[in-house]
Length: 258
Image 1 (spheres, rainbow, N blue to C red):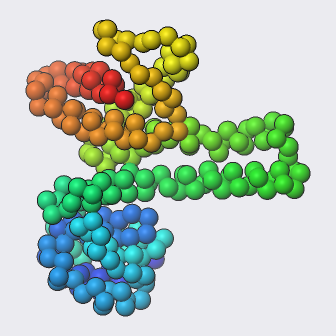
Image 2 (image 1 turned 180 degrees about the vertical axis):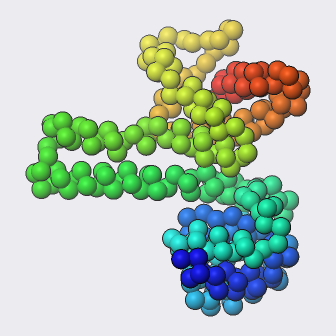
């Protein structure tokens, strides 16, 4: 399969301005995303004309080559033709020539891309369940419906966990700590406090409690905060006790942010 995309990869690298023109490279579900040293060196029309390329566009400080669903195979071949490939990663959001909006789009895209297949799969289960009901194969009152329904709902209810892991990988902070922080948001005791109707405070600081299941923004903000707070504690805490106290203080500080 790799041989099939070898020539396409060579042509893309050549017409993008050569490997020397590539600063960083990553890919999403359908696109190769280049950060180029000089965008003007890329022959956009020639790349569009390549057999196997759907489109080539400049967006958010990136030069994007639209490949399709087989982008991962093409990416693996392209990397072979770029010098210093060990330095190629998804740090596009750290490039100085990328706007704030471009960084935001890159972060959201990089976070959601890995979990899109799971969301699509769960959506198809929902569609299948709807067909089963339509053709009277199952009823909404049946245990079959109940079980299949919560199987498809699982990804949406626990969406903060998936986003936490994906966002942490994107922002280069601890995925395990991000999962712990997602667990704080979804802990059943937090929901009990919320539904009890009483005012809640910690050290006399009032807390506003909301339901975090199926939410997106709170966990993204949480992991974003973690990406700054965790390195801060890594810098100031001695190496001898870092393995214990960095996670401890990160969880305590970031856990109050949502």
